[in-house]
Image 1 (cartoon, rainbow, N blue to C red):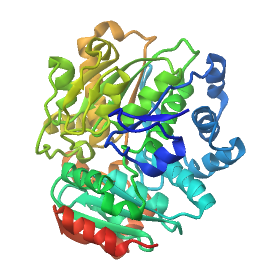
Image 2 (spheres, rainbow, N blue to C red; image 1 turned 90 degrees about the vertical axis):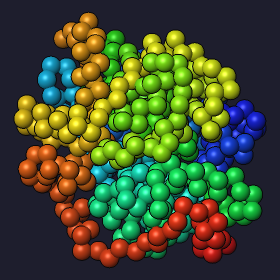
Image 3 (cartoon, helix red, strand yellow; image 1 turned 120 degrees about the vertical axis):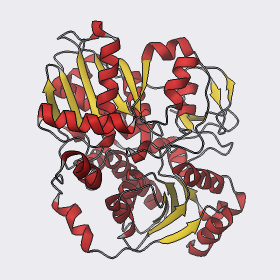
Length: 453
């Protein structure tokens, strides 16, 4: 399998080169030239398999030419050594809780496998790489944790100083060794723009920069696994279709689901649930794409993205071309996109009300991103009552642990959610990070100063 650039002006590369390169030389995002289909009988066997073995089957299908199957299984067993609960709420409606990893975020699923794959390839070559990544909260902590202590990979994390929670910040700033955290005076989109500019800067080529953001295809392939896993826990047969509600910011989470569908998972529809940064739902509604700049600061902070990078991948999958500025150079098949996706925006007021209503009705706590997904699913069901039969399977994604948003939860529910021990211990650790203006020259100077041969 080869990987092409969404801008179609760079040569196709192997998965290894796409993983270590991050962004294509023409500024596009790498996409697989085809997605193989997993046999229905194999998918049905997932119902009796655990998470690491499902991951191994899916990733072996995608990476069979580049990673030995026994090695890949050992990586999966090491990466996925924690629970992945699928919580029944009512009828055939479930929440997939992706918050039991080491940093209590769904980003752990991608970052931990990505770190192991990168380490596998770089160790074999004896090469050294620097990961430069932007985060709106959870990506940075997951990446920092996943790569912490690796001898041949350094990590530089950029985050918007005023738009991450205390726990999110501390998970990035209390590590040492090969992890550097930089607080940018700006928004997530500013951080992401700085990262993309650095990748295209030829004067930094000798620094061997790569990304752990969802612009890197190595983030997306592992994210397809939990869609299969959640379906396998609650389905009855391969004919059991599912509607997923996906909280969407930079759209890597959704892209993982799309890859799962292309691999053969019986997905009936994706509900794209966003906060007030609703550029994609508006595009589906009107056919006109308009970037939101600056992005709107909402309590579901990981979704404060005014121009999602992965939209270019989705557009490419539907036959279009979108450049990095968000200009459609070739229109995708919007009719088909509307058949596959329904988009809904959820305000902060609706998010808070959903958290409160959900707790009162079901006795369970969800955090802002999970609340956006749940409310988006409710809006879809209200508009599509024909989908509410007892036979239809719904899965809404919860992407972070409520304790990471304790300030907001206390305001809404009047109590602090339980904090896992390993997160509470972080309060006693010393923070170490650099504050920086939204200035590319300053970032470039930092990269050059800290580059290790």
